[in-house]
Length: 85
Image 1: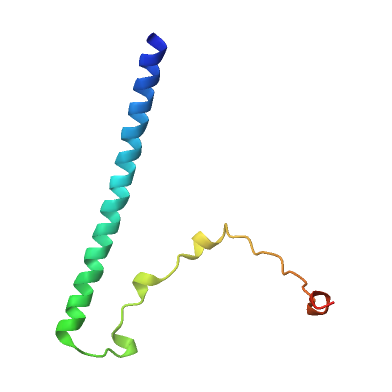
Image 2: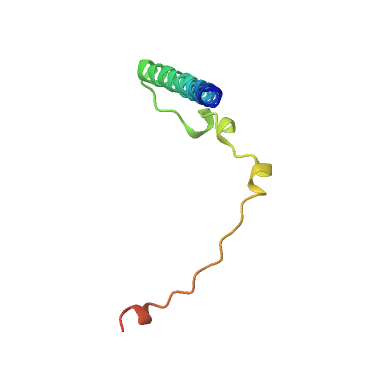
């Protein structure tokens, strides 16, 4: 009986923790969606085509230090002649 109770407690705690992680990621996604919708409303209100120098592209730059862990795949030597024989 003790083992069933312990197993039930472990399962309930793990389910609660998983639900908390899901809600945090949903909140981040909702916040990003709200920001994108606000930008769309601003652009729709102004109805203006922006020039290239008016865009803020610095927020979309990739951090070069995060690219250090990426491995470059080896190219595959594929000969089409073998495919049609």
